[in-house]
Image (tube, rainbow, N blue to C red; front, side, top):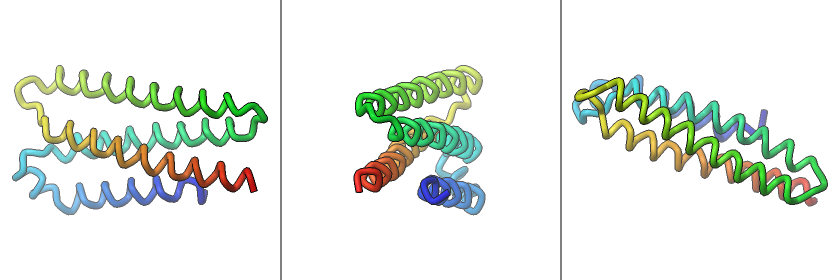
Length: 127
């Protein structure tokens, strides 16, 4: 559970901000429901990605780890691009572009937290 602590913190903080400041986000033309959806999707993808990394670190072949990192990044980018496309098509003229950009910012944050946890796991395996 310690491995997923950073992801849980980011998820909790973003969710709390969205619920606490939903009126302010609406004033800024940011649909907080889209941000919440992106947050949940990124949390799920990051957990799956971290689990792939943990499994790959257990293998003696170092290329397996590299492949898992690359595969996880490709999967996350594709899922997010498809999700953004579906949202933009479904929302039509009411699309909240600022919410989409908030989702991209969340992608960067989640990726950084995930890679940080992966590096810590890798270092603990080497020791």
